[in-house]
Image (cartoon, rainbow, N blue to C red):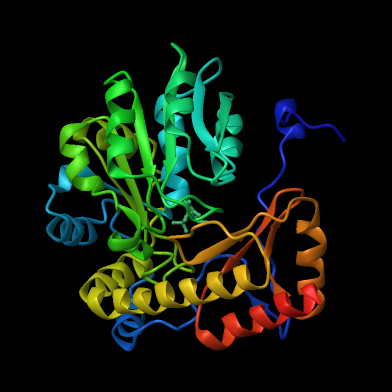
Length: 352
Ligand code: PMP
């Protein structure tokens, strides 16, 4: 049967996440291995008793907690059911048919997919040879039809970062009314000494067109509950609130996110261990002869080119679920030492 579904969707691929199977070790989705902290579980359990009611549509308590932590006003924060939804909603408030959404590539698959769902045109600017967002080339690619720019920092899947200076120079070159979304899903894993970390919230005071996207899915360990947020100019937040699907940030997610913010120090301490493991795994892989980009996220990127699919398929046979991008490379989540060692054992065996 042919139903009246938009025909332009036929050519769109669906988002396919890495799938675990019984007994598998999943290193495909950049999740935290540790279960939620007891205080977070308690908050979720307490909130569960009230799920006969709709959640607070404005996520007022969470928004206030975030505003206080970040030193911004509540009018500058919009929560969403994952930052992926906020990416989509930014496209919705800026772009439609004939408009262009600009981003580096390879990067987060949602950018081209959601752009095409909106009927707009994705403009993908290749990364530099070091797999970093090429901000000069991106600035040169801005046209009168560009409505939104994504900068993914650290970039998924390469883990690379741009410098504050490069980002500031980029923002200076762009029209001041062009919205630039800085996707900081992995920002908690960046180590300032190693990576010229961008102080996005400070930069936002200089550039009101800058929108910062963050999530509770990664370092805060709440991927299953779906909650993220945007820090943006009140004009952007007002527009985002209009396209927000009512009640989409559920009450368990709101309660868990507030509790996670309360336990921030404990949760962020885990990122130190991941940063150390990232250095250890990257060094071991390079010693084995693998190309590894310079990651500041909770994953590493192996640009294996034509070998990417076979490498990931062999890993699956060994019980490891990785994230391959056929013809390009493989992304591997960095977690606790025992899991990282299981991956290193596979990587060693693949070479021999
Ligand atoms: N941005 C980037 C770069 C990501 O990798 C992800 C998750 N894969 C997201 C945003 C979305 O995260 P969530 O919707 O879980 O907040």
